Length: 198
Length: 269
Image 1 (cartoon, each protein chain N blue to C red):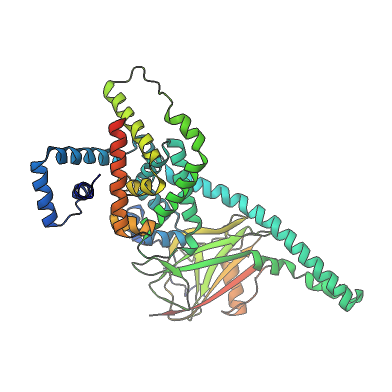
Image 2 (tube, rainbow over the protein chains, first blue to last red):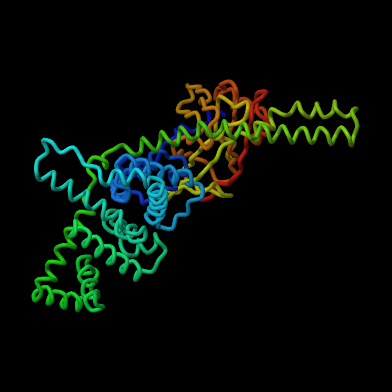
């Protein structure tokens, strides 16, 4: 048997599945590759979505450390659910649905700390004026976002911080597009009024 | 806010989003020309959307993938211990019930037979706790569960589970195809002059991926995939000699206390 063994028995990864190749894969393909045990595929998926995921979490929760934990737990939950993932071309909706649920839970459980944080004064010595103004605007925005209902906050953050289209928001929240438009408008109006009054 | 004013502002918001028809755009642009108030509202909406979309610079550069990987590892290290404890309690209870039932139904003289069957426990236990999972990866496609057939071009992805009170330390994965050849997936076997050994595996892991998609030049026809879990490393030549002796379709592990798992599929064009 040994003499007749062909010499093409070397395990070879697909040429397209190098780090650069994985970048070209769709979200669904990366999920399926990750399910098959390709660790690098899931890492690629995280890198692809991490900026928007973290941005949305930090706008929602107002705190960097909490946002990082929530984003991390979101991807851990998705990793654990790999065996049951169905590839429908709707990974973004799935990702943001999980993220929003985690943000809601975290938001509710950190109410007391949040109140203290919203009104806490920051150390402002030796900071240029432009930076101070920017910080103030961010703080006002955080407070204004905190005053929105969860429904309005979700829509406005999915649209602007996560960059989802109306269709994707409708799919994520399982509501009609007309409702997305209305909530988005209401949220923007309330934010504008809050910031004008700030 | 009157309904007309609300509708106008909604249109402004939609205009900012680029979500208006050509005729709506013309109407909005007319309004923006005529109304300073409309221009001010649009400018406010634009600034607000920019603020919402601004990157969270410090945060967005963290290595989230590493954090997720560490958390998953930490959780998977904790979980088997928990499951093992629960399983041990469950199996202990079950064994006690069976023991009591046999004692009362068949009498104490049957205990020796019960013990004799119990000697097969390591193999049965191994089957319950260890095994491989196989997925096929078609050219330009994602992984799919291994079905009744694969094509010659398909690669295979493997992961293993190695739990239980006595997990294994080594694993080999190979196949025999219709030509009778032994095809090696793990360990890699590059040259007839080599004699590589089983790969070391992690005790207590579930669905641990072996991160390569492996392609083999198998011939059309039945393909038997084998996973050989053992407590000591075996060499490729030892196993091939044993396959030759026992024929291409084997059912038992070549070493005592080992576990041989066989998965059947068929290679088609």
